[in-house]
Image 1 (cartoon, one colour):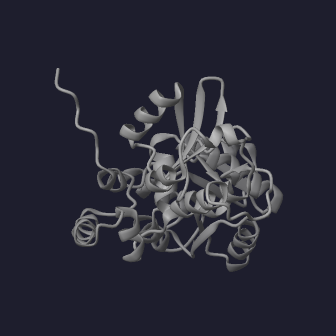
Image 2 (cartoon, rainbow, N blue to C red):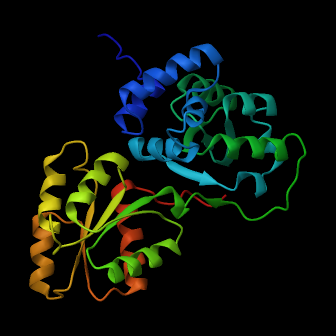
Image 3 (cartoon, rainbow, N blue to C red):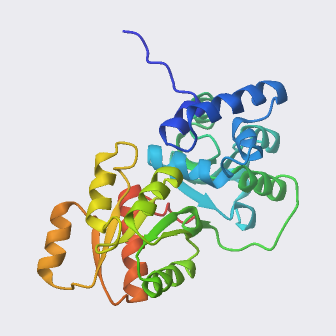
Amino acid sequence: MAVPRRKRFGEILVEAKVVDEPTLNRALERQKQSGKRLGQVLEELGVVTERDIAAALARQFGFKTVSNLSRASFPPELLKLTDGDTAMDKLAFPLKKDGNVLYLAMVNPLDMEFIDKLAFSAGVRIVPCVTTPSEIQTAVNRHYYGISPQPVSFVEEDRDDWWTILVVDDQELVRAAVLAALKREGYNLLEAPNGADALKLTVQKMPHLIISDTIMPRMDGYELFRAIQANLKIKHIPVVALSSKSSAEEEAKLLELGYFDFIAKPINPVRLVARIKRALRLIYGNSPPPRY
């Protein structure tokens, strides 16, 4: 039986809808000329940020994300599992050894050649976690080369500024209230006053989640939801309904239609934020990794 070809990094980014084919091809041509990493080239082109790439990989393959590596404390025996030059070259950093399991922060968690080599030499099973190049570089500089910021407790990457949310409501005050509550949490935010504008933004920007009023001019929330469900490119994006009808019947109706969740007006900021965090974790599996 033929072994299936392993997908290239660029193909994965296209499948995850981080970039399109023409942009990828342009980046690959520039990569050949410069010898730089593909992600770095895409950043220089202004197409994506390193966080976009890391978040896409995490969503696509169910990896966990990690941060604050440079400010955490790690035991010397853990760091000895690899050397600083290799860690910098491979953009991989050991996080925790738990029995025969090694949690490894990586920019490219699909680098099976390096994973297999390290697993064999260290006698462990490796669980990759996704992070950004700058996280690895600053961590290696501190822990291997002695550049030492003040240590803090290591925390998993649960930062909300990885997530983009589209807020759709024709009432400016309601929209402003929702945006203000989410802005305090650090989310990347988009807004639209009606379903027609929201549909265009959804296709162009691919938000991770949409919060939409049900009654709006031009294209209402129901029409927007049906249009999203009919488009294979965006139908995976969860939609949370906003409605001034707070009855159990209205909630049941919306959930039956396929909305991910329902939030009644007037907006309660605490409830709104809790529901949105819950939706993102349930849909994208962004559960925190073990604390190290």
